[in-house]
Amino acid sequence: MEVRDLIERYQNGERDFSYVDLSGANLSGVNLRDTDLTGANLTEANLSWAFLNRANLTSVCLRRADLHSASFSGTNLQQATLSGANLAKIDLRLARLRGADLNWAVLSEADLSGADLQSAKLDRVNLERAKLNSACLVGTELMEVNLRRANLASAKLDQANLREAHLEEANLREATLIGANLTEANLSGAYLRQANLTEADLHRVVLTGADLSEAIISNADLSRANLAGAYLLKTSFRKAHLLRTNLQDVYLLRADLSEANLRGADLRRADLSGAYLCDATLSDADLSDAYLLETHLIRTNLDGAEMTGCCIYNWHTEDLDLTKVKCQYIYTHFNHSAKQPTDRYPIDRDLEPGELGRRSDHDSAIVEVYFTESPNWETLVFTLVQIELESEDLSLSVRSYELVEDNYLLKLAANRLVNSKALSRRIFQLYPEIQQRLLDRRPDILNSLGIARRTEHPDPTLEPPPKANLPDPQSPALADRQSRLYREVVRQIQHILNSQVPEQFVESVQRLLDFLKGQGISTREIQKRLIGQAILQRAKVDEGFREQLIRWEKTASEAERLSTVGHAVRMAIAMLWNQFL
Image 1 (cartoon, rainbow, N blue to C red):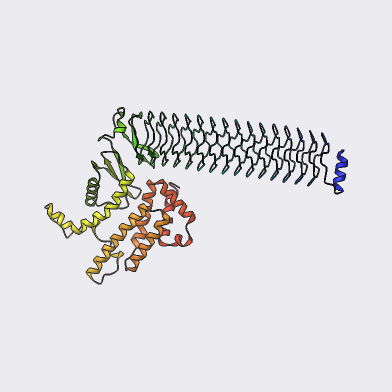
Image 2 (cartoon, one colour; image 1 turned 180 degrees about the horizontal axis):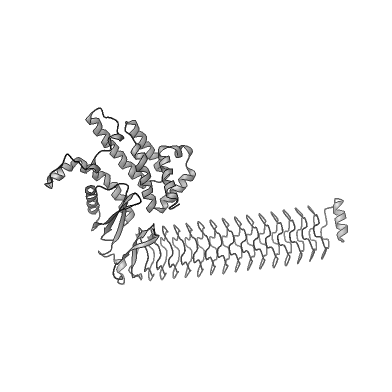
């Protein structure tokens, strides 16, 4: 059929041109919307800038055709042959390309948003910078495809064959690649946040600098893969195979590596803070200079692992055998301001083989305790005595005391490794109780020690709250009752602020403040100083708590935000913003 006849018949209302032979025809810029060209032969035809929206091109042959910048949105191209065709910048939004042959085609900067490419053949196709967001590519052949900087957000790539594909800097956010074959594919710098790669074959894949935060990679094979410098925050690697995988300098914060096989993996300088390694295998792995802050190592196999220079501040261990690890020294603390590990152990020598596992009496740890006000040393001494009595063979001593950003930092040295976070919480729990007991029985204690009591100058840190905080008492008994009540509520508030999440403590603390007001007791000092300082103190040492504050700021109701406690929380967040958030 001649092009002139085709256009004339189309303008006269005819739409059925199935099985016509238009090979080599020049149809550039023509309007053939809603046309039926089923089975047509358009080999090497020129359809650049043409309009075939919603057309039916089922089983059409467009081999080596020129379709660049054409508009094919909503077009049916199922089982079509487009091998070697030029489809650069084509509009194929919501097009149906199931089973289509696009091998060797050029689709650079093409728009295939929402297109159905299930079971299509796209081997060695150029899709650089193409838009494939929400596209269906289930079971699609994409071997050696060029998808550099392509947009595949929310695309479905389950069971797709992406072997040796080029996906550098591609956007695969929330994409599903369940069971996909990505063997030796290059995804360096790719964005895979919240993607699902369950049971995917990632053998020898390159993921350097990629962002896989919150992605699901359970039961996947990443053996000998290269993930150096990748971001893996809260990523799930449950039961994944990571044999001899390169994980140098990766961020695995709060990642789930339960039952994962990391035998021989390279984890040098990796940040595993808060990660879960329950029943994981890290035998012969290299963890030199890795960060294990608050990492959970439960029944983890570390036989033959290299751990020299690891920072184990606040790590959580259970049924962990460290007798077979290779380790010359570790760090027992971390300076969050300087972002570096501190307190080398041993101080002036290297560990003997197996010594780390034996946890000898010479093991040490540093516990940091932040006070919003200068502590009462009598109370502190008796608090530490109580803690030592509660813990077998534990000895604590004051290592240093200094003012740090309007807080008083007390460093305690323990004679063995302890959970410093739990110990700090226990100190804050006991401190107000011991202080009250000292206040009640201080004369007896001084008498028992033969110390003359100077009643004219009582200890100001054990005195009731200032007169300005309490209403004028009608009687000494009422004033004493209000003083005791005030201290008890302050103790409860401190405990709540150090143990609950913002969603809980805003309501809990507000109820306590309302209770005090109902008793005629001023809460001004609590509102002005205690709440904000307690939140700041906790946020400085607890990254998870900082994230909880951010979440509360985004999700809190207007009533919560405008409440007395809510206002104090928002003020604390504002003070933290420049430093941490």
